[in-house]
Image 1 (cartoon, rainbow, N blue to C red):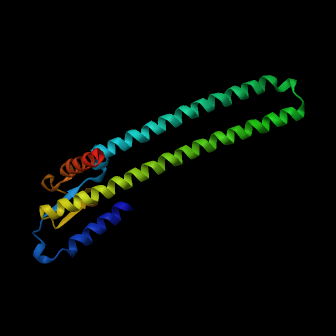
Image 2: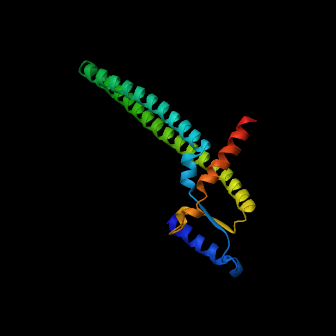
Image 3: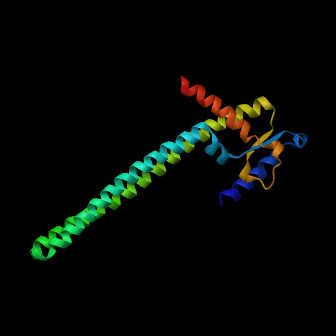
Length: 174
């Protein structure tokens, strides 16, 4: 669905270019490649991967604790009164719900961190692309996934990554 809208947007954008600019300068960029290969993109990926690993470690510990509690409960079950069994079962069910809630919250936190990092990077990349477009005399620069065909000669992705990395490294140094 996004690709269809993107394609239609690109077609409308190209149709909006005046007839005199039909021989104008056009460029394309692959935003996914920018996100994967730029310093900021790789840094964000590593940060999120580290968070995911920490959550996974916590989840594994909690899961082991739950298994131990359940095993202990199963061993003691026959020696406990019905009321004690009911209380232990209720406690165990609550701990399982807490475990599941933690997992869901961790997943949501990771997704939000990914969305925020992606949004920030894309905003910064958009500024770099606008600067490149203005300085390079481009009439149109579009996202590569919205096109059916692009010649390698109009692909600006590597140039955008270099310019963005330079700007990113410079802003990080301040």
